[in-house]
Amino acid sequence: MLDQLKETIIALSTAPGVGAIAVIRLSGDDAIAITNSVFRGKNLLNQESHTAHFGTIRNEEGEIIDEVVATLFIAPKSFTKENVVEISCHGSPYIVQRLIKLFLRKGVRLAKAGEFTQRAFLNGQFDLAQAEAVADLINADTEASHKAAINQMRGGFSEQIKQLRAELIHFASMIELELDFGEEDVEFADRDDLKKLVNQLLSVITTLVSSFDLGNVIKNGVPTVIAGKPNTGKSTLLNALLNEEKAIVSDIAGTTRDFIEDEINLEGVVFRFIDTAGLRDTEDKVEAIGVQRTKEKMKQASLIIYMFDLKNDSLTEVNRDINMLENLGIPFIKVGNKVDEAQADLYAEMQKDESTLFISAINREGLEALKSKLVDTVNLDNFKSGDTVVTNIRHYDNLVQTQNSLNAVLSGLGDNITGDFLALDIRHALRFLGEITGQITTDDLLANIFSKFCIGK
View 1 (cartoon, rainbow, N blue to C red):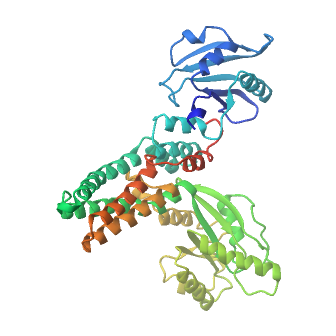
View 2 (view 1 turned 45 degrees about the vertical axis):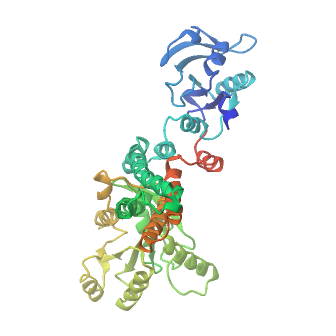
View 3 (view 1 turned 90 degrees about the vertical axis):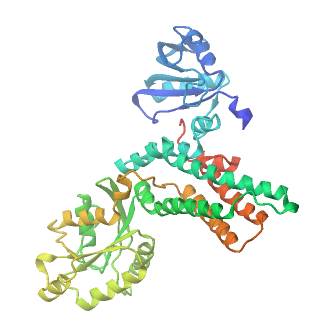
């Protein structure tokens, strides 16, 4: 990896395709010198950092490939902390290809996915959690996901983790010191103070772990299954929510054989709606497969919209379905459809439950109340208050492992185990915390993280 850091890399940093301009980025010790060898304009080697220069780039025969603007970022004042040149050229794929090929002939190498950000991390520009936030920021499609990524990229989450780790390191060093004087039976680490610290750390970590459910919603949206018997209006509701004819609507029961997905943004939260096959016993083999898939999707969902038919369903059927949903343990919203044609007895009975919503999907009545209910169910209040929210599954897993290690420390303290076993559990906790910010890494871990980035970032 160290040898690769010495190489100058290149990639297209703007989206591929035709556009007004394209930006090609180079990074490495020789980035400016190599660019200067094909650039005609000012001598780039004599220019200051953070300056832009107009000129032409020519091939080995002196042919002009394009008129460009070369922007210089001289180490360490760049994203990667290396010499960086960003070449703004005309956004023709043909021009971009010719320019990149020219630089490849000059000894530059094509960048791997995420390699610019990986170099920034390896050169100490930011820690691993902040590097991962760069990818989250690029992919942010709501105000909430943007805000979470910005907070993490600016180090809010990292600072909490580093502080927790620093406090634990002190006690770890005291216990390690005890091991050096094992025969003298001395205690440098006060066990009561250690217990107090571990409880404080666990309190913070437990809060962070608990925030992942909300963080996952912010980053990935809410998988929301629309479930109910055939012909309750599930597909009509999906079309009404999306404001387009996404699903086939028919009076024939069992029209929806598979699930249909699409998403909308409600007050900064993305809901991924999944219209499913109607829940019923059926002899139709294809429909039966759809019903089975519906049940599987319901188990995987974060939220279920349970629709029942106020015109045709019975109270017994509705209560049976509600009991089934309660046993699933997944949050659900009860929605009575066809309120304009409702049976008086069923409508009156269901009105006793204040949490039940009543709509007419075909007439688009009651949809705003349903949308508000969806947003209220997710509840972004904790995030809006500025609390740190965990959005990354890798961070979540490491925090859970830290939590387990610290609980083992508490258990060991309660059982008066020897310092060497305490030290082992504390080392585990330190390692898991260190993996979050990259204080402890492996090549495989870095390769896995940065391979998910886009080329050119």
